[in-house]
Image (cartoon, rainbow, N blue to C red):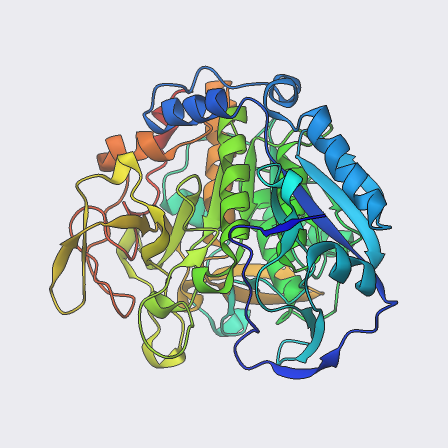
Length: 515
């Protein structure tokens, strides 16, 4: 049957990868196919209303969303028919997530999608990769929006940095940070905070010891498996366990009555998206806040993956779910070599609350100083800058970014981050990982810090805050403006900047944001 190129699917080998040879043709694996949504015009209108601050009271239930904006039966049937004709097995189908999971061999997938799958060696691990674009049957053009998982390179990095040993560090418990930021009194009762984890795991005994030591009692923590990944602790604080435990302990300490659910998925573009859509459309746990501390430079993602993830965050907005995402720890370059400024994704999605980092110092009566987090020679700094993919959202119209040299330019594209919080490992968080007390920083701590604040706000308001960005930009005086420091390429200034956004939490004012 005639085939056409799938827009936005072009891939290149990862930087530094070495070609090893073709994949074994009989090796089996699974992929995810994303299908267009129903009611696209009505969906776009809902999202536009939320972006304009006009729709917070009109969130959909998950059942309403599935009926109005899930995948159409006819589109799912068309993908099933195509899969069958290529000898591929349909192993799962989710109309609300618009996702079809397919299983088959390398040879079958190469034939079905017009690709050649090769083995690559890379410093982060060998992977199955492809170059060029994916092809799909012409009759499925417009129906299939993304095909993810043919290439299984590690897609994201955890955004945390280990600090000094707990006994030698200037550090705070999450409760102390919440108190410094004047969080409103609440426990997150009745809320569910979802965490996306792309590796590692947690040990319940460690969590119980940690929370008991803080005096917050027991915290309900659950794990959900996505695409076969599991809660699998590695035993190393410097590995993904550090991310998982940091996320859980920050949220659980500040919102101990909330249900914390960690969604474990493979670290691939397919796994990442599937974890996000599983959490958003979870009718059992029903998260109201989603915290993501993993990401990678926009330049390392395909356009189809960028668009698919942003579309998932749009769905979250219509459901009243707030999405908090770490802005990265690589400064204005986001760790990309070769020069130039880069921003981290998914923080750069206009439908995420991008969370940058500060260095926080406490005095006898509260915060004594707060500046942009930039360790300089130590190599860690808050992410931030200007997207190369996403247009300037309406709520950032008229803003400018200042370069460290003093040049000020109006935002031509989406600016990152939106907000900030303590991220400096030198003023980090005391946590427990794999049986050891340690100190961690990085913007990985800031996403759950904000997620826990929103869980408290949701409890106080009796309704989900949802898509906060438009209202926060309308009320910038409700945050602590950070005006000192830089992240390499960009400098802090009065008002929004590409280092710390609008600033760090001032809990008493955001609590007044009503749904």
